[in-house]
Image (cartoon, rainbow, N blue to C red; front, side, top):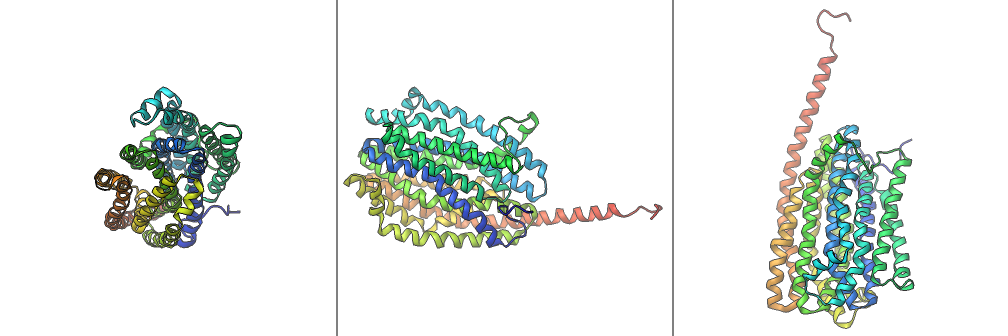
Length: 472
């Protein structure tokens, strides 16, 4: 009997397959981001100093997530493409090699738990010593979370390469429910303060990863291993080739976020804290849609390996429609109720006013964000990850940072928030051009795949005929 959680990416109806992949993936990404949002809510209840400390750690969180997600996306793309081309042996090799590689890259980040290390890094922002003390507390468990996060993302990638998005979704929901329960318990009941938030996240990520790992073993699917053979390490280069640009693209985010914190810091803790609240709320919209983008990766990778050009085109059209159907009404609703939503964090009057302004400015920039998200998923699925890196460098480094310095000079701290809006809109127009280019690449790749298949059919047909003089 066929596993109902596994979708037929090669022959099933495109809309049904995408819905089966993207629905759980979007929910999974929503709950992945819920870790940070829930932490922000409870930490904001502690005070402005703790909230500012949490904001300073966002670039470090992005750093760890960028490395983990880059390796996971690279592995998922390779496994999906291998399975689309009926090469299960290669898919298994990639699966076995991915987790050791992730641990090799992410474990050094555990050094951030040391006050001497994180104190030197965050001291560069010239913030008050009371804020640095809170940073030390939060960073202890956050530093230990990064290898665990990589473990969970690799397990999720294996499921996605099979066309199963429901199982990792359920695991992520379980981990987040546990985080929601443990956050107030550790922070307030155990009086751990800001450290309790990062401990709860650590336990949530670990739980989600262990659930997925145990289910992979139970269903006898390819299961990540903590050690791999020397010959299996050879696929690390392929993972880097595809996942490296994705990781670099995501690494641009903490660099840009650190730059914005640097611009905002002289205006006071309220401006930094307001940006933290606005950013977390933004992620609650963008990351679920990023789940839709990620669901395109295994689908496009599989159908590219099969040479199914029309299915890829249809998937792009459907994904864009889904993005806009979600983002338009949600953005309008949040625009009108921004102060009420931000009020859940119990900020002070100044932080509430600033964060409402920053969030509404961000919502204005969402008009072309769906195009960027679909381009990112398509580029990775057709093994062109360099475009993801190009987009992020263009939007976050070449546009947002210079505009942040300029607008802050013209309009004070509020100008920094406006720079974010302008950079998103300009980047969206750039992605419209890239989408047309990527679809042309899909055409050429699929023609090549069809030609290879036809040659294989002819060769097999020729080899099956008896030679002259052979008996019938």
